Amino acid sequence: MNEVDGLYTEDPTRGQRRMLSALYNRCGMKAGRKLVRCIMRKLGISAVFPKKHLSIPDRQHVKYPYLLHNVAIARVNQVWSTDITYIRLKGGFVYLTAVIDWYSRRVLSWKLSTTLNAQFCVDAVREALDRYGWPETFNTDQGCQYTSEDFTDIFENSPTRLSMDGKGRAFDNIFVERLWRTVKYEDVYIRGYRSVKECKIGLESCFTFYNDRREHFSLDGNAPSDIYFNRAFIEGAA
Image (cartoon, rainbow, N blue to C red; front, side, top):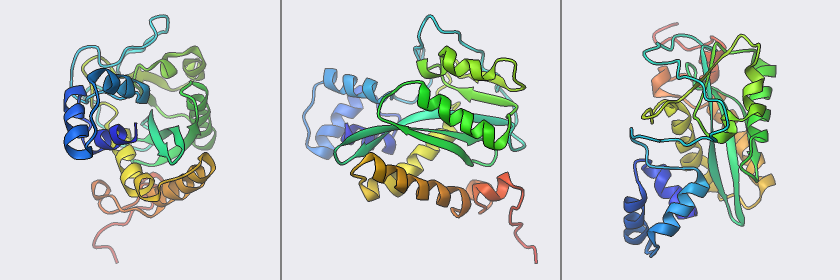
């Protein structure tokens, strides 16, 4: 699972066949396609490219339309989104979810869980809403955690529109995917957390640095908090 996670984070366009090849050629591991398929499903990952049936939600759950086609992201709290990723530990693994503001790239809240259920996703969203108010639009994929009533009920009778990635829209949540890559390569893979407690403490420092100190080229050298709280550095200013 750790090797598959690392190879996928390195190149999320790897499907089952390329993952098999990479495991053997790069890691010296022989595995069958059935095992790789099982691991990728357990991690909740698939090759990132536009294709049919990219996400298969619970058929009994309500799906929402995608609302962000050709929408220019021009201000904070215009669009938030969330996703889940797998975090390796020395003695196991946990799942991480985060809520991010698209315009500033700021991580508004995050949670860890040892199980892949809807509750820790709900807790992360509610924490972000309590701290920063309601965004105009909240975007997710069509995973069962986000189509569940526990999650969608958050937005009933609220000023926020709920949007969900549609079929063939593999890159709609690209801001969160970039966040996962940064967190794993700049923190998780380097530190090698041994326990859930250690991971939680480490990620607290990681996200604080990411939000408040890490320069982003896409933000003209500013940190996400600089943009979110409107204190961006203007190049050439005295």
